Length: 287
Image (spheres, rainbow, N blue to C red):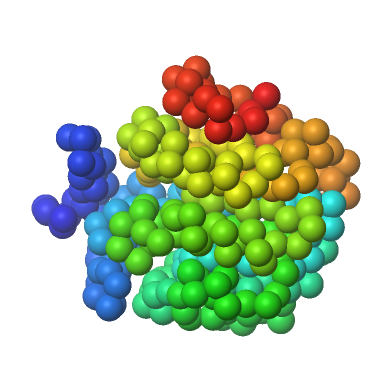
């Protein structure tokens, strides 16, 4: 993976992305995966799990804005939030910017990811050092939703690809348990892979979600470090519509400023390219 001070992420379809590395800051292997943090020339510090880029300082705000603020600004009163995964801390950071939040529970399976990011990427992980509204649990998110008695207004599944420890986060049993621990008007948003490289995964995810929820959607975002640039999140709820129930006034009332997210981005994200709409026909309610 490391060669001549370059790091390369190789994709299975013969596609790769390379970044010039100035320094290797961290490299350890947990019981789940190899965790690396490198300082790159153009993207700042970068987190990789098993050689796959998870976060870079340069563009992390795009992913974290879109996985967090889309559901947070649709729900009328998000108070109790659950984040599954998200070990870099960026999603919890954005959740906790909302004054309505009374508690954010974050369940991350790999303690090493949190420790590495706290030490080397405080831009995302500073919140993990201790926030009065954050309940950080090092544990299995699949087991947590199976056993918890709590009800959550929003559940955000900030997972890696469906390999290794993240594989169960894409299945019907998991989402059945997610549905059980959602409060009325609850929303679940999940990392939804690439419409170019993972059409089959997107379809299977939406099949699972549409069998459990009344309203299922998928929305897109673009960034610099994920293969193909165009990636997706899934959205599911039994009552809320991500367009009809979205109001500009909620952005204004929040008092928050964003680096990527805004009203136009929110609405446009649900407008899908034709090839993606065709692949997911009958499984989504996108306008």
